[in-house]
Image 1 (spheres, rainbow, N blue to C red):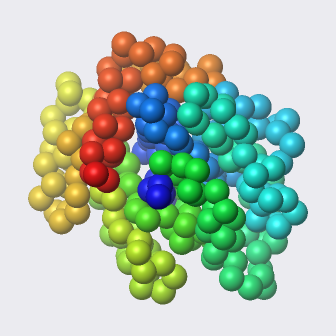
Image 2 (image 1 turned 180 degrees about the horizontal axis):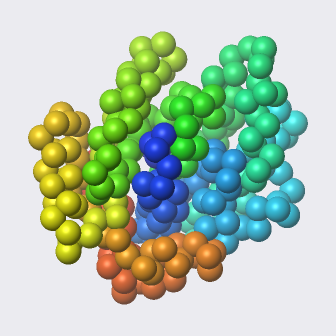
Length: 254
């Protein structure tokens, strides 16, 4: 029975999609069967894993409209052990299409039910907003992993996100838990990064992953080549960090 992890933070630019792409790829490299679900209309996770998002036959949008079965949408073996549910800008219309639809919070969960036994991990990249798409991700997920950028406003919005997670748990998905926080874009040369980490540790009584993702130029370059970091530059500090994070995620489940 696989673990379903939503990667969420309504703040943009915190390394959410980077984490979704590279955690998925590193888990698959470690021999786990992974399904990556792109719930962000920007489709950056889709293209970052090497899929041409403009030319895929079906996307998450078609799934939400109920026009196709999940099996038709899945891009099989995008990488070894890694399948992808792709997305493009069409998904931005989903909010409007869902007005008045019964059980709209559970569309993705009901679709994923059919295939989740086939995977060790399902990783969902959420949009940078607390929208119906994010709610769908959270009703599907077992846990929420929150990337936090090592910068001054890191904690801003975090309480709002935790409140949303608590609400979803209370009303829609009683098994939802906070997976924990992972620090991203850490710059060892600045005192600020260190202060942010200490500050969050003091103020947050949630699990915090030991692995900290550094600010790394190779990490930033990799998506434009349609490759996760462990394929683009396996010896980079970014690749090493995400492999460590993947191992930590696996061990946490066991």
